[in-house]
Amino acid sequence: MAVQVEVTTANRLEDYALFAHLTDAVRALKEEAAPVLPKLAGRTVWMVNSTSRGGGVAEMLPTMVSLLRDLGVATEWVVIESTEPRFFALTKHVHNLIHGHGAPALGPAERELFERVNRDNAAFLRPRLKAGDVLVVHDPQPMPLAAILKESVSLAAVWRCHIGLDEELPATRAAWEFLRPWAPAFDRAVFSAREYVPAYFADRAQVIYPAIDPLSAKNRELGVHHTVAVLSNAGLVVPPGPLWTPPYRQLAQRLQSDGRFYPATVSGDFGLLTRPIVTQISRWDRLKGFEPLLAAFARYKRRLLHGGWADDPVHRVRQELARLVLAGPSPESIQDDPEARDVLEALRVQYRALDPLVQEAVAILSLPMESAAENALMVNALQRASSIVVQNSLREGFGLTVAEAMWKRVPILTNRHACGPRQQVRDGEDGRLIADPEDVEQLADTMDLMLADVPARTGWARNAQRHVYANFLVFAQLRSWLRLLGALLDGGAAPGAAAGPAR
Image 1 (tube, helix red, strand yellow):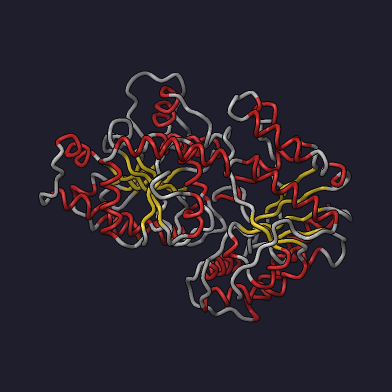
Image 2 (image 1 turned 30 degrees about the vertical axis):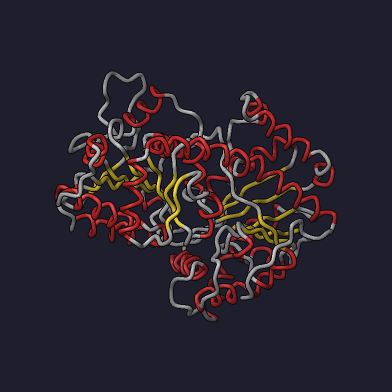
Protein backbone atom coordinates (compact mmCIF):
# COMPACT_ATOMS: atom_id res chain seq x y z
CA MET A 1 0.00 0.00 0.00
CA ALA A 2 1.27 3.49 -0.87
CA VAL A 3 2.40 5.98 1.77
CA GLN A 4 2.21 9.76 1.81
CA VAL A 5 5.59 11.34 2.52
CA GLU A 6 5.77 14.18 4.99
CA VAL A 7 7.96 16.88 3.44
CA THR A 8 9.68 19.01 6.06
CA THR A 9 12.27 20.83 3.93
CA ALA A 10 13.02 24.00 5.84
CA ASN A 11 14.19 26.32 3.04
CA ARG A 12 11.75 28.76 1.53
CA LEU A 13 12.23 30.99 -1.50
CA GLU A 14 13.08 33.89 0.80
CA ASP A 15 15.97 31.83 2.21
CA TYR A 16 17.46 31.39 -1.26
CA ALA A 17 16.96 35.07 -2.06
CA LEU A 18 19.25 35.98 0.86
CA PHE A 19 22.21 34.72 -1.19
CA ALA A 20 23.39 37.27 -3.74
CA HIS A 21 24.15 34.66 -6.40
CA LEU A 22 20.62 33.19 -6.14
CA THR A 23 18.51 36.36 -5.90
CA ASP A 24 17.93 36.75 -9.64
CA ALA A 25 17.00 33.07 -10.03
CA VAL A 26 14.34 33.37 -7.31
CA ARG A 27 12.93 36.51 -8.90
CA ALA A 28 12.67 34.83 -12.31
CA LEU A 29 10.86 31.86 -10.79
CA LYS A 30 8.26 34.06 -9.09
CA GLU A 31 7.66 35.94 -12.33
CA GLU A 32 7.13 32.64 -14.19
CA ALA A 33 4.71 31.43 -11.51
CA ALA A 34 2.46 34.50 -11.41
CA PRO A 35 0.26 33.75 -14.47
CA VAL A 36 0.07 30.01 -13.72
CA LEU A 37 -1.00 30.12 -10.07
CA PRO A 38 -4.64 31.10 -10.76
CA LYS A 39 -4.99 28.05 -13.05
CA LEU A 40 -3.82 25.77 -10.21
CA ALA A 41 -6.08 27.27 -7.57
CA GLY A 42 -8.20 24.56 -5.92
CA ARG A 43 -6.13 21.75 -7.46
CA THR A 44 -3.50 19.52 -5.88
CA VAL A 45 -0.40 18.33 -7.71
CA TRP A 46 0.38 14.73 -6.68
CA MET A 47 3.98 13.55 -7.16
CA VAL A 48 4.24 9.74 -7.14
CA ASN A 49 7.38 7.60 -7.27
CA SER A 50 8.71 4.34 -5.85
CA THR A 51 11.09 5.32 -3.04
CA SER A 52 11.56 8.14 -0.55
CA ARG A 53 15.31 7.72 -0.23
CA GLY A 54 18.19 6.76 -2.44
CA GLY A 55 18.49 7.87 -6.05
CA GLY A 56 17.99 11.17 -7.81
CA VAL A 57 14.19 11.30 -7.90
CA ALA A 58 13.90 10.91 -4.14
CA GLU A 59 16.49 13.65 -3.72
CA MET A 60 14.76 16.14 -6.01
CA LEU A 61 11.18 15.71 -4.87
CA PRO A 62 11.39 17.23 -1.35
CA THR A 63 12.71 20.52 -2.72
CA MET A 64 10.25 20.54 -5.64
CA VAL A 65 7.31 19.87 -3.33
CA SER A 66 8.46 22.43 -0.78
CA LEU A 67 9.07 25.24 -3.26
CA LEU A 68 5.86 24.60 -5.20
CA ARG A 69 4.00 24.90 -1.91
CA ASP A 70 5.89 28.08 -1.14
CA LEU A 71 4.74 29.49 -4.47
CA GLY A 72 1.14 28.65 -3.52
CA VAL A 73 0.67 25.32 -5.34
CA ALA A 74 -0.90 22.56 -3.20
CA THR A 75 1.53 19.67 -3.70
CA GLU A 76 1.79 16.20 -2.15
CA TRP A 77 4.26 13.32 -2.47
CA VAL A 78 3.23 9.65 -2.41
CA VAL A 79 5.49 6.58 -2.61
CA ILE A 80 4.17 3.26 -3.88
CA GLU A 81 5.11 0.09 -2.01
CA SER A 82 4.83 -3.66 -2.47
CA THR A 83 5.35 -6.69 -0.28
CA GLU A 84 6.05 -8.78 -3.39
CA PRO A 85 9.80 -8.94 -4.08
CA ARG A 86 9.01 -9.93 -7.67
CA PHE A 87 7.57 -6.47 -8.32
CA PHE A 88 10.76 -4.52 -7.76
CA ALA A 89 12.78 -7.24 -9.50
CA LEU A 90 10.48 -6.73 -12.49
CA THR A 91 10.72 -2.93 -12.44
CA LYS A 92 14.53 -3.15 -12.13
CA HIS A 93 14.48 -5.44 -15.17
CA VAL A 94 12.40 -2.87 -17.08
CA HIS A 95 14.83 -0.15 -15.94
CA ASN A 96 17.77 -2.15 -17.29
CA LEU A 97 15.97 -2.89 -20.56
CA ILE A 98 15.35 0.82 -21.12
CA HIS A 99 19.10 1.24 -20.74
CA GLY A 100 19.68 -1.54 -23.29
CA HIS A 101 20.62 -4.37 -20.93
CA GLY A 102 18.91 -7.66 -20.10
CA ALA A 103 16.87 -10.34 -21.80
CA PRO A 104 13.88 -8.79 -23.64
CA ALA A 105 11.38 -11.30 -22.27
CA LEU A 106 8.27 -9.70 -20.79
CA GLY A 107 4.84 -11.24 -21.11
CA PRO A 108 1.31 -11.41 -19.70
CA ALA A 109 2.45 -12.62 -16.26
CA GLU A 110 4.71 -9.60 -15.86
CA ARG A 111 1.97 -7.22 -17.02
CA GLU A 112 -0.48 -8.78 -14.56
CA LEU A 113 1.96 -8.35 -11.65
CA PHE A 114 2.80 -4.79 -12.73
CA GLU A 115 -0.83 -3.70 -12.90
CA ARG A 116 -1.96 -5.62 -9.82
CA VAL A 117 0.59 -3.96 -7.53
CA ASN A 118 -0.30 -0.56 -8.92
CA ARG A 119 -4.03 -1.23 -8.41
CA ASP A 120 -3.27 -1.98 -4.76
CA ASN A 121 -1.47 1.35 -4.48
CA ALA A 122 -4.20 3.19 -6.39
CA ALA A 123 -6.59 2.21 -3.61
CA PHE A 124 -4.63 4.49 -1.28
CA LEU A 125 -4.65 7.43 -3.70
CA ARG A 126 -8.20 7.25 -5.03
CA PRO A 127 -10.06 8.66 -1.98
CA ARG A 128 -7.51 11.46 -1.63
CA LEU A 129 -7.81 12.77 -5.19
CA LYS A 130 -10.44 15.16 -6.46
CA ALA A 131 -11.54 16.07 -9.95
CA GLY A 132 -9.16 18.51 -11.61
CA ASP A 133 -6.06 17.44 -9.66
CA VAL A 134 -2.77 16.86 -11.47
CA LEU A 135 -1.03 13.47 -11.16
CA VAL A 136 2.72 13.42 -11.90
CA VAL A 137 4.02 9.85 -12.10
CA HIS A 138 7.79 9.41 -11.93
CA ASP A 139 9.44 6.58 -13.88
CA PRO A 140 8.12 3.14 -14.85
CA GLN A 141 7.36 1.65 -11.41
CA PRO A 142 4.04 3.53 -10.85
CA MET A 143 3.21 4.10 -14.54
CA PRO A 144 -0.16 2.23 -14.55
CA LEU A 145 -1.56 4.54 -11.88
CA ALA A 146 -2.85 7.19 -14.29
CA ALA A 147 -4.97 4.74 -16.28
CA ILE A 148 -6.26 3.05 -13.12
CA LEU A 149 -7.17 6.29 -11.32
CA LYS A 150 -8.76 7.87 -14.39
CA GLU A 151 -11.32 5.06 -14.32
CA SER A 152 -13.00 6.89 -11.43
CA VAL A 153 -11.49 10.40 -11.14
CA SER A 154 -11.13 13.12 -13.78
CA LEU A 155 -7.43 14.03 -13.62
CA ALA A 156 -4.70 15.65 -15.65
CA ALA A 157 -1.72 13.27 -15.78
CA VAL A 158 1.97 13.70 -16.60
CA TRP A 159 4.56 10.93 -16.87
CA ARG A 160 8.03 12.05 -15.84
CA CYS A 161 10.59 9.52 -17.14
CA HIS A 162 14.09 10.09 -15.75
CA ILE A 163 15.78 7.31 -17.72
CA GLY A 164 16.35 6.45 -21.36
CA LEU A 165 18.76 5.41 -24.08
CA ASP A 166 19.75 7.24 -27.24
CA GLU A 167 19.66 4.16 -29.47
CA GLU A 168 17.14 1.49 -30.35
CA LEU A 169 17.92 -2.09 -29.35
CA PRO A 170 15.87 -5.27 -28.85
CA ALA A 171 15.98 -4.58 -25.11
CA THR A 172 14.69 -1.01 -25.42
CA ARG A 173 11.94 -2.07 -27.84
CA ALA A 174 10.80 -4.73 -25.36
CA ALA A 175 10.67 -2.23 -22.49
CA TRP A 176 8.76 0.45 -24.39
CA GLU A 177 6.33 -2.11 -25.79
CA PHE A 178 5.74 -3.44 -22.28
CA LEU A 179 4.89 0.08 -21.05
CA ARG A 180 2.81 1.10 -24.08
CA PRO A 181 -0.65 0.03 -22.71
CA TRP A 182 -0.45 2.62 -19.92
CA ALA A 183 0.85 5.50 -22.05
CA PRO A 184 -2.50 6.80 -23.47
CA ALA A 185 -3.67 7.85 -20.00
CA PHE A 186 -1.02 10.58 -19.83
CA ASP A 187 -1.73 14.04 -21.20
CA ARG A 188 1.96 14.97 -21.21
CA ALA A 189 5.31 13.25 -20.84
CA VAL A 190 8.61 14.70 -19.66
CA PHE A 191 12.06 13.30 -20.46
CA SER A 192 15.64 14.31 -19.69
CA ALA A 193 16.76 14.21 -23.35
CA ARG A 194 15.01 14.30 -26.72
CA GLU A 195 16.76 11.09 -27.68
CA TYR A 196 14.84 9.21 -24.98
CA VAL A 197 11.31 9.93 -26.23
CA PRO A 198 9.48 6.85 -27.62
CA ALA A 199 7.36 7.40 -30.73
CA TYR A 200 4.05 6.98 -28.90
CA PHE A 201 4.86 9.97 -26.66
CA ALA A 202 6.39 12.20 -29.35
CA ASP A 203 3.31 14.41 -29.82
CA ARG A 204 3.01 15.31 -26.10
CA ALA A 205 6.57 15.17 -24.77
CA GLN A 206 9.09 17.78 -23.73
CA VAL A 207 12.53 17.92 -22.16
CA ILE A 208 13.07 19.20 -18.62
CA TYR A 209 16.50 18.79 -17.10
CA PRO A 210 16.68 17.43 -13.56
CA ALA A 211 18.23 19.86 -11.11
CA ILE A 212 19.90 20.26 -7.75
CA ASP A 213 18.99 22.30 -4.69
CA PRO A 214 21.89 24.65 -3.83
CA LEU A 215 20.87 24.90 -0.17
CA SER A 216 20.22 21.20 0.46
CA ALA A 217 22.44 19.32 2.89
CA LYS A 218 24.11 17.67 -0.10
CA ASN A 219 24.92 20.89 -1.95
CA ARG A 220 25.15 23.76 0.50
CA GLU A 221 28.48 25.43 1.08
CA LEU A 222 30.67 23.78 3.70
CA GLY A 223 33.60 25.66 5.17
CA VAL A 224 36.85 23.89 5.98
CA HIS A 225 35.92 23.33 9.62
CA HIS A 226 32.47 21.98 8.76
CA THR A 227 33.86 19.66 6.06
CA VAL A 228 36.40 18.22 8.50
CA ALA A 229 33.71 17.85 11.18
CA VAL A 230 31.37 15.96 8.82
CA LEU A 231 34.11 13.58 7.66
CA SER A 232 35.17 13.02 11.28
CA ASN A 233 31.64 12.52 12.63
CA ALA A 234 30.92 10.03 9.83
CA GLY A 235 34.04 8.05 10.68
CA LEU A 236 35.59 8.82 7.28
CA VAL A 237 38.72 10.47 8.72
CA VAL A 238 40.57 10.26 12.00
CA PRO A 239 39.74 13.59 13.70
CA PRO A 240 42.76 15.91 13.58
CA GLY A 241 41.70 17.49 16.88
CA PRO A 242 38.77 17.96 19.28
CA LEU A 243 35.30 18.16 17.71
CA TRP A 244 32.38 20.30 18.85
CA THR A 245 29.79 17.87 17.44
CA PRO A 246 29.21 14.21 18.36
CA PRO A 247 29.81 11.22 16.05
CA TYR A 248 26.93 10.16 13.82
CA ARG A 249 24.79 7.30 15.10
CA GLN A 250 25.71 5.22 12.04
CA LEU A 251 29.26 5.42 10.68
CA ALA A 252 30.44 4.91 7.12
CA GLN A 253 31.77 1.41 6.46
CA ARG A 254 34.82 0.55 4.37
CA LEU A 255 35.47 -2.75 2.61
CA GLN A 256 38.54 -4.40 4.14
CA SER A 257 41.02 -6.86 2.68
CA ASP A 258 39.20 -9.78 4.35
CA GLY A 259 36.10 -8.95 2.29
CA ARG A 260 34.03 -7.57 5.15
CA PHE A 261 32.86 -4.05 5.92
CA TYR A 262 34.06 -2.29 9.07
CA PRO A 263 34.02 1.35 10.22
CA ALA A 264 35.99 3.21 7.57
CA THR A 265 39.00 4.20 9.69
CA VAL A 266 39.33 0.97 11.66
CA SER A 267 42.59 0.22 9.83
CA GLY A 268 43.75 3.85 9.86
CA ASP A 269 43.06 7.10 8.05
CA PHE A 270 43.10 6.80 4.25
CA GLY A 271 43.87 10.43 3.53
CA LEU A 272 40.72 12.26 2.47
CA LEU A 273 42.08 15.51 3.89
CA THR A 274 45.61 15.34 2.52
CA ARG A 275 45.77 13.26 -0.66
CA PRO A 276 44.60 13.68 -4.27
CA ILE A 277 41.22 11.92 -4.24
CA VAL A 278 39.38 10.52 -7.26
CA THR A 279 35.76 9.82 -6.27
CA GLN A 280 32.63 8.23 -7.69
CA ILE A 281 29.43 8.28 -5.62
CA SER A 282 26.39 6.51 -7.07
CA ARG A 283 23.81 3.89 -6.36
CA TRP A 284 25.24 0.37 -6.57
CA ASP A 285 24.07 -0.24 -10.11
CA ARG A 286 25.80 -2.25 -12.86
CA LEU A 287 25.25 0.62 -15.28
CA LYS A 288 27.23 3.09 -13.15
CA GLY A 289 30.56 1.67 -14.36
CA PHE A 290 32.15 1.00 -10.98
CA GLU A 291 33.97 -2.15 -12.11
CA PRO A 292 35.85 -0.64 -15.10
CA LEU A 293 36.69 2.42 -12.99
CA LEU A 294 38.21 0.23 -10.28
CA ALA A 295 40.08 -1.74 -12.94
CA ALA A 296 41.40 1.51 -14.46
CA PHE A 297 42.66 2.83 -11.13
CA ALA A 298 44.29 -0.51 -10.38
CA ARG A 299 45.98 -0.39 -13.81
CA TYR A 300 47.15 3.16 -13.07
CA LYS A 301 48.70 2.15 -9.74
CA ARG A 302 50.28 -1.01 -11.15
CA ARG A 303 51.96 1.06 -13.86
CA LEU A 304 53.60 3.16 -11.17
CA LEU A 305 54.77 0.06 -9.33
CA HIS A 306 56.49 -1.01 -12.55
CA GLY A 307 58.28 2.27 -13.19
CA GLY A 308 55.66 4.39 -14.95
CA TRP A 309 56.34 7.49 -12.87
CA ALA A 310 56.06 11.03 -14.24
CA ASP A 311 59.23 13.02 -14.93
CA ASP A 312 57.89 15.94 -12.91
CA PRO A 313 58.86 15.26 -9.27
CA VAL A 314 55.77 17.08 -7.93
CA HIS A 315 53.44 14.98 -10.02
CA ARG A 316 55.35 11.85 -9.02
CA VAL A 317 54.35 12.54 -5.41
CA ARG A 318 50.78 13.20 -6.58
CA GLN A 319 50.72 9.85 -8.39
CA GLU A 320 52.01 8.03 -5.32
CA LEU A 321 49.50 9.65 -2.96
CA ALA A 322 46.39 9.41 -5.19
CA ARG A 323 43.47 7.44 -3.80
CA LEU A 324 40.23 6.15 -5.34
CA VAL A 325 36.94 6.37 -3.41
CA LEU A 326 33.91 4.39 -4.60
CA ALA A 327 30.89 5.15 -2.45
CA GLY A 328 27.20 4.34 -2.44
CA PRO A 329 24.26 3.93 -0.08
CA SER A 330 23.98 0.98 2.24
CA PRO A 331 22.24 -1.52 -0.08
CA GLU A 332 19.83 -2.73 2.61
CA SER A 333 18.22 0.72 2.64
CA ILE A 334 17.06 0.83 -1.00
CA GLN A 335 13.80 -1.10 -1.43
CA ASP A 336 13.36 -0.55 -5.17
CA ASP A 337 16.88 -1.69 -6.21
CA PRO A 338 17.30 -5.41 -5.47
CA GLU A 339 20.47 -5.61 -7.59
CA ALA A 340 22.50 -3.37 -5.27
CA ARG A 341 23.80 -6.24 -3.15
CA ASP A 342 24.88 -8.17 -6.26
CA VAL A 343 26.78 -5.17 -7.62
CA LEU A 344 28.52 -4.60 -4.30
CA GLU A 345 29.38 -8.31 -4.11
CA ALA A 346 30.98 -8.16 -7.58
CA LEU A 347 33.06 -5.18 -6.45
CA ARG A 348 34.04 -7.03 -3.28
CA VAL A 349 35.36 -9.95 -5.34
CA GLN A 350 37.22 -7.59 -7.69
CA TYR A 351 38.73 -5.68 -4.76
CA ARG A 352 39.95 -8.79 -2.96
CA ALA A 353 41.76 -9.90 -6.13
CA LEU A 354 43.86 -6.70 -6.18
CA ASP A 355 47.49 -6.50 -5.13
CA PRO A 356 47.61 -5.46 -1.43
CA LEU A 357 49.46 -2.25 -2.33
CA VAL A 358 46.66 -1.32 -4.71
CA GLN A 359 44.01 -2.28 -2.15
CA GLU A 360 45.49 0.29 0.23
CA ALA A 361 44.89 3.00 -2.39
CA VAL A 362 41.17 2.15 -2.81
CA ALA A 363 38.31 2.85 -0.41
CA ILE A 364 34.97 1.19 -1.21
CA LEU A 365 32.48 2.84 1.13
CA SER A 366 28.95 1.95 2.20
CA LEU A 367 27.23 5.10 3.43
CA PRO A 368 24.42 4.63 5.98
CA MET A 369 20.96 5.94 5.09
CA GLU A 370 19.28 5.90 8.52
CA SER A 371 19.56 9.68 8.56
CA ALA A 372 18.99 11.30 5.16
CA ALA A 373 20.60 14.54 6.36
CA GLU A 374 23.74 12.84 7.63
CA ASN A 375 24.03 10.80 4.45
CA ALA A 376 23.70 13.96 2.34
CA LEU A 377 26.37 15.73 4.36
CA MET A 378 28.71 12.74 3.90
CA VAL A 379 28.27 12.96 0.13
CA ASN A 380 28.76 16.74 0.21
CA ALA A 381 31.98 16.48 2.20
CA LEU A 382 33.35 13.58 0.11
CA GLN A 383 32.80 15.55 -3.09
CA ARG A 384 34.43 18.65 -1.62
CA ALA A 385 37.43 16.58 -0.51
CA SER A 386 37.90 15.27 -4.05
CA SER A 387 40.34 16.45 -6.70
CA ILE A 388 38.23 14.82 -9.43
CA VAL A 389 34.70 13.42 -9.36
CA VAL A 390 34.04 10.61 -11.82
CA GLN A 391 30.70 9.50 -13.23
CA ASN A 392 31.70 6.47 -15.28
CA SER A 393 28.16 5.42 -16.18
CA LEU A 394 27.66 3.05 -19.08
CA ARG A 395 24.13 4.47 -19.28
CA GLU A 396 22.84 7.54 -17.50
CA GLY A 397 19.62 9.48 -18.03
CA PHE A 398 21.01 12.49 -16.19
CA GLY A 399 23.80 12.59 -13.63
CA LEU A 400 22.74 14.49 -10.51
CA THR A 401 26.10 13.59 -8.97
CA VAL A 402 27.70 15.30 -11.96
CA ALA A 403 25.76 18.52 -11.35
CA GLU A 404 26.45 18.31 -7.60
CA ALA A 405 30.21 18.12 -8.06
CA MET A 406 30.20 20.84 -10.73
CA TRP A 407 28.31 23.14 -8.35
CA LYS A 408 31.03 22.50 -5.76
CA ARG A 409 33.73 23.54 -8.26
CA VAL A 410 35.13 20.03 -8.73
CA PRO A 411 36.15 19.00 -12.27
CA ILE A 412 34.36 15.99 -13.78
CA LEU A 413 35.59 12.91 -15.60
CA THR A 414 32.77 11.23 -17.51
CA ASN A 415 32.08 9.97 -21.03
CA ARG A 416 30.29 10.64 -24.29
CA HIS A 417 28.73 7.17 -24.33
CA ALA A 418 26.18 8.08 -21.62
CA CYS A 419 23.67 10.56 -23.02
CA GLY A 420 22.96 12.45 -19.79
CA PRO A 421 26.51 13.36 -18.76
CA ARG A 422 27.47 14.49 -22.25
CA GLN A 423 24.62 17.02 -22.07
CA GLN A 424 26.00 18.33 -18.79
CA VAL A 425 29.77 18.37 -19.24
CA ARG A 426 31.60 20.28 -21.97
CA ASP A 427 34.85 18.51 -22.78
CA GLY A 428 37.84 20.69 -21.95
CA GLU A 429 35.62 23.31 -20.28
CA ASP A 430 34.09 21.64 -17.21
CA GLY A 431 36.24 18.50 -17.15
CA ARG A 432 36.92 15.67 -19.55
CA LEU A 433 34.75 13.34 -21.62
CA ILE A 434 36.23 10.05 -22.76
CA ALA A 435 34.74 7.91 -25.52
CA ASP A 436 34.21 4.59 -23.76
CA PRO A 437 33.54 4.07 -20.02
CA GLU A 438 34.83 0.49 -20.30
CA ASP A 439 38.17 1.50 -21.87
CA VAL A 440 40.42 0.90 -18.87
CA GLU A 441 43.53 2.38 -20.49
CA GLN A 442 41.79 5.59 -21.53
CA LEU A 443 40.28 5.99 -18.08
CA ALA A 444 43.68 5.51 -16.42
CA ASP A 445 45.42 7.92 -18.82
CA THR A 446 42.76 10.63 -18.44
CA MET A 447 42.80 10.39 -14.64
CA ASP A 448 46.56 10.92 -14.67
CA LEU A 449 46.40 13.83 -17.12
CA MET A 450 43.70 15.55 -15.05
CA LEU A 451 45.62 15.10 -11.80
CA ALA A 452 48.77 16.47 -13.43
CA ASP A 453 47.20 19.66 -14.84
CA VAL A 454 46.32 21.73 -11.79
CA PRO A 455 45.70 25.04 -13.66
CA ALA A 456 43.29 23.28 -16.05
CA ARG A 457 41.43 21.68 -13.14
CA THR A 458 41.04 25.10 -11.53
CA GLY A 459 39.57 26.55 -14.73
CA TRP A 460 37.27 23.59 -15.32
CA ALA A 461 35.99 23.90 -11.76
CA ARG A 462 35.04 27.58 -12.21
CA ASN A 463 33.35 26.92 -15.55
CA ALA A 464 31.46 23.95 -14.13
CA GLN A 465 29.84 25.97 -11.36
CA ARG A 466 28.72 28.69 -13.79
CA HIS A 467 27.25 26.05 -16.13
CA VAL A 468 25.19 24.54 -13.31
CA TYR A 469 23.95 27.95 -12.22
CA ALA A 470 22.64 28.66 -15.71
CA ASN A 471 21.08 25.27 -16.43
CA PHE A 472 20.79 22.76 -13.60
CA LEU A 473 19.53 24.50 -10.46
CA VAL A 474 16.02 23.82 -9.14
CA PHE A 475 14.76 27.27 -10.17
CA ALA A 476 15.22 26.55 -13.88
CA GLN A 477 13.55 23.16 -13.42
CA LEU A 478 10.50 24.64 -11.68
CA ARG A 479 10.11 27.37 -14.31
CA SER A 480 9.86 24.60 -16.93
CA TRP A 481 7.33 22.69 -14.83
CA LEU A 482 5.18 25.77 -14.35
CA ARG A 483 5.13 26.38 -18.10
CA LEU A 484 4.10 22.75 -18.64
CA LEU A 485 1.33 22.87 -16.03
CA GLY A 486 -0.01 26.13 -17.43
CA ALA A 487 -0.18 24.69 -20.95
CA LEU A 488 -1.67 21.44 -19.68
CA LEU A 489 -4.52 23.19 -17.87
CA ASP A 490 -5.10 25.47 -20.87
CA GLY A 491 -5.40 22.37 -23.06
CA GLY A 492 -2.63 23.56 -25.38
CA ALA A 493 0.24 21.68 -26.98
CA ALA A 494 3.17 20.53 -24.88
CA PRO A 495 5.74 23.36 -24.83
CA GLY A 496 8.87 22.34 -26.68
CA ALA A 497 7.29 19.13 -27.98
CA ALA A 498 10.00 16.59 -28.61
CA ALA A 499 10.39 13.73 -31.02
CA GLY A 500 12.84 10.87 -30.69
CA PRO A 501 13.79 7.70 -32.49
CA ALA A 502 10.87 5.45 -33.38
CA ARG A 503 10.50 2.53 -31.02
